Image 1 (cartoon, rainbow, N blue to C red):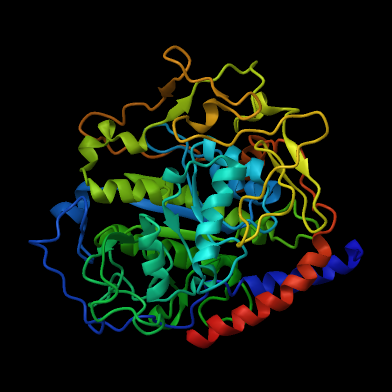
Image 2: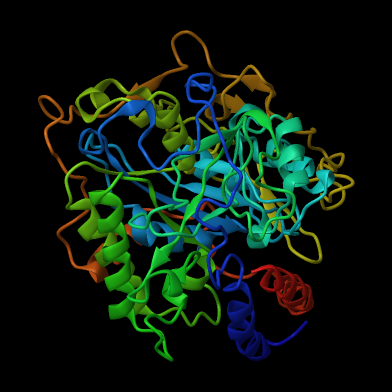
Length: 515
């Protein structure tokens, strides 16, 4: 095993490599060059929507929310969730509900029990392939579905979204997703500013008439292809610094240099985050996205070089955004639910996807169900040589892989096989040890804890603002306690990372060649 000192030297290299996962060097579409044509008279919500810069449903921009989506990619570990929580845990939307995010999860180096916990807390879990490969084959896509369902207890019906590693996809990738009954993909880039005629910053749309984004970089898309009725694309909306289209940023923008400078400048980054957000807010209110690899802003990752100044800057931006009227921080599942059934601000009180549906489970009950106070002492550690992980659903005899995503269990001596989540029980109410659903007419309850947002959709802002970024980050991190209180790298990870760097370098070179 490599010493920690050597790992500390590898970490900056790994961070520099992974920073290219989803970076852009220029526009991915040409205004008017997509060959896209959609008939709005035939394409009707909720099952079909034409690619358009205008809000869905014919609503006036001033009457709709400004959505800010927060997504994360790759492994789920205590240190990645801590990184996310320093930005989100203390925040609420105008209705008083805690904000939710989307995590595009790969199984490599992932702690399955934390995936369960994150899902039960109300966040969206989505597919990012099993082993983080671009242009993924079907076993990488479907295998991740199977593993997340079997080992994290995520209902298959709840895993509706996908993002390609390195944003490296083709028309065939989209066809595979459609055939596997995914609801949406979010791998394409909207790379032309909303203020420019011919912008490709479309609201989420279906592929009934083909793709309208990434015509310059993704093989086989645009010119009316691929036609996938009812399958949605949620573009990733680029950010632009003072250089406009020449200063484009996408994932982890705080790692980029801005305005042609030679070094990262948090003040400059904050400036273009605000200016791009303002452009969205003042035009057609297309969603604004923060797309992250949380490991880059983790302070609990061994050898971390995360900048506290950068972390404070991100919190300062989100604070500022939440101070604007009618700004909602949502995950992609919530965003899509609104696009499919768009309602004006005045009707958001009754919009179910934005409410707080909290499972009511007795805190004294001992059940391995994704609620940390219930599952203490019940979680199993699976001690594989490359990367041990934790699960409530029984350790497999061998690590899951694309050709064997749901291996048979190997329970400890004297213990019974744990039962996987059935289709007719909700995750927080399933007891995998007892093999029973505790959900009955009296105990299966979800309580709505949302508050009214004001008469006639009064311009209330979200919560979690008004404190200093440093104190906000400190308080938010304290609100999430990993189930095993471990923010360390499991034994065996360091050599795995050393080997993985080579693969990441090769894959990164491929995606950079496309851009």
